[in-house]
Amino acid sequence: MKQGCTGLTLRELQVSRKSVIPLVPKQITAWIKQLPAANLGESSQSIYRMLVDANQTIIDPDVRLSILNITEPVALELIDSLERQFINNHISLSEKQRKVAALVQALQTELSFGFHAVIESIISEGIKRSTKKLLAHAICLAIKYHGLVILRCYQLYASVPGRVWRELYTLYKLARSHQLENIRIVSSDLGEPWSAKNCFTQVMLLSIANPYQLRQSEIELVWKVLPSYVEYCSLEAHAFSKNPFLLNLNSNMPPVQKSLYVGDDEEDRLKISVVSVIDRIKIDLAQVSEKVKYSARRTMVYKHLIHSWSNGTQRSFARTPCSEDMQVSIGLGATHYLLTENLLAIQKAQLDDDGEEPEYNEHTLDAMEGSLKDATLATLANDKNNLRVSADRNYLSTSAIANEDVWAKLYRPDQAVSEVETELPVKQRSRDTIVKESYKIQNSQLVNMSPGGYCIQISADELPKHAQTGEIIGIIEGDSASQQWSLGIVRWVRRKVKGNHVQMGVQLLAPDVLPINVQLKSNRGEVNGVQRALLLPALTGVGQAATIVTNPLAFNINNKLKVTEITNEYEVRLTKEVRSSGSSKQFSFSKIESAKDNSRGESIIKPVEPEDMDGIWDLI
Image 1: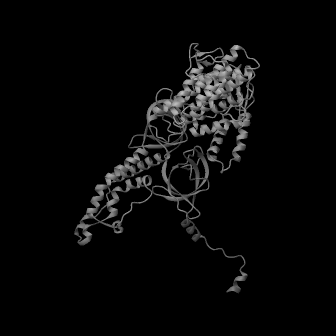
Image 2: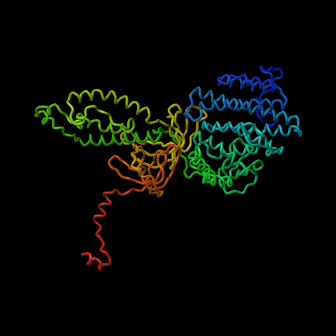
């Protein structure tokens, strides 16, 4: 590798190198047609080796650009197929997935090196009128592939290398210095004519959209919708805006907000104004229809972009570095289950401390004769396992255990009870194993903390598959005897450069969370299933009433719910959506008075006598 006169990274040219494939456009076209389309590994390896050979061989700029234009569609198809193996899957990548991700980056990098070689050759020989359009074409496509590398880093929650930012800024400076940034070119994958400034603006808009706070599919959706708003974005040296974003073209850092910008270099400093973009997104958000595909996800993305670009970034609290261990539960289901287990364990411990045991009156049974002597009430036999069964029933099965003998619900002989007691622990262990594999406490390390939340670090191998941004997370403090639970939400995810660890920013929602079961009430008399939810207490300090956290699919504003706590049951109506993500929704609610309360209230009210008493005498 070397750095050319333009400041771009190039492969060193080898004069005596002979390529395996003749580097002629017609020969390359015939060779690509013979590639095994079904063998993804062999095809991607052949394309990569051909690109490396071409980047190390001395070729005319127009011929090199023709070869790249022929190879580009096939390379993009291979990249899309390879990305399916590690995008929208687990955040933690296996060894095979890491190699596939490295291959994707290598393909994109070699394509960008090819366009770098075209730019270097044209500029070193002197820009002519005949080569000006070739130079604009090469710069635009080089910016596009740098943007794809940045997109992949965001989707893997990895840091973008500083070299990529430096070369991206160098390409845009070359386009500006030669007045090529607005020349539109036609590419096979860009669709409509596109310019270097459009490609550069798309990458800048993605970088300032807080992509680490989005899921992988949402980051991809942002990348696809941004071309529609590029023309509304202002990218000038002097822009008058309330909250502009600044970038230094001489640095290797992404753009930041004005309040966070540090630097005195004003010569190559640009301001990104997104005021018009926000106005346009608000119009499109109002026009999103429920019939549109991915409308819910698109609505969420629009709201995220408006929030990211409208509000200035600033820290309300100072971070305090820490190096302590912390236990967390990731996911709404895991938090609900573990909270329920904790409450049931506390209740059982309180009963054991009181020393009150239920009296079964065994002497009375021994004194009896006949069938009653060998009979035992099933409810007494099941008292020992009531807590355990109630905890597991809602998570492993929605139906009761069938029994052929209907009389067994009331009376069972002692022998049958002993058989059940010997067989149940074997089945129960298998059921417990399934539960513990799905819902378990994760060990993490506390990196820093503030009154607003925590930054925790977890080994990527121990992360559950559903761990993503927007996921509910339970925070366990204290020892096993006196556990204190707080509820938070994952705001951002970032992978560490060294080591197989993932850092998560957790925003605290509330302490002392209560697990509840909710059932959606239907006006048509339909019976809906019971679902898990969490009840958050009122936060008087910020003026927030009690709220309910549910799954994001089944519940909306104005829904009527039947809420079941451990010792209480009531009905509520969801009044306002406080927060929403791809994993949960948080609603404020109001309680609905029951029919019994209304009947009591009506019985107390005395009847009001009519004002006109004259007509009553005739009726009598």
